[in-house]
Image 1 (spheres, rainbow, N blue to C red):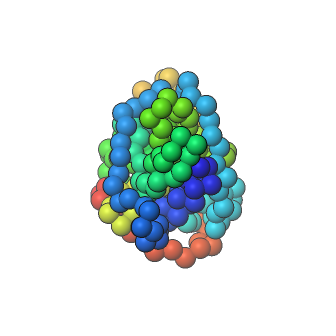
Image 2 (tube, rainbow, N blue to C red):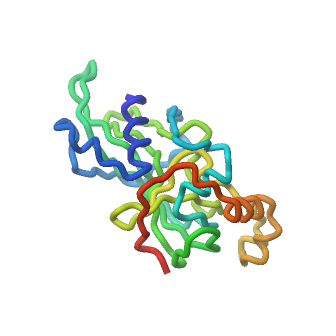
Image 3 (cartoon, helix red, strand yellow):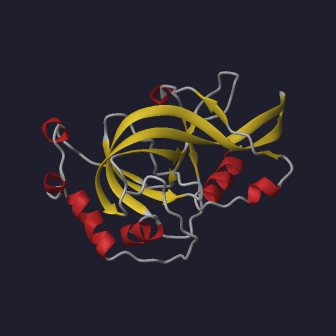
Length: 219
């Protein structure tokens, strides 16, 4: 199950639709309400990437948007690329989990997004209706938390949506309570992580050529 989900996730990160050619794959998207993931086990996914996820210049170069944002709301999990698999208890449906978030954009480093957007994060609660739930997430990755600040690296999709995918695609910002009440570009400039991503944008490396799209959240 982990291998299948990993394959679906890696393909979707770059807008690929090749799984739709398989007759066993359903185009339908199912959805579940928000679940408290802090009480669920983590199922790490091993992914193979076409760029160095630990090279910040390459990471900034391959995405369409890099921005500082506050997580306003977690709107639950949806599942795409649903396939039917055989298990010891009979057929079961398995899809790639994406967690939906509402984000307040504080500052744009790469690209120009409006103040409030929605994103899909690769990873989330597993699709299991029998109570055996867990959280699928890439190794060295994490799901954003509500009311926390991150530097997000996003891919624009053909439909105008934005996907956040892979290790280091939402980097936590250690912001004090006092700073969080009035976080501005000027106050961000004092944070070393923010400075690193500003420099990475200025020195970004386009190591992979990919089809690029424009988000519907562009200013």
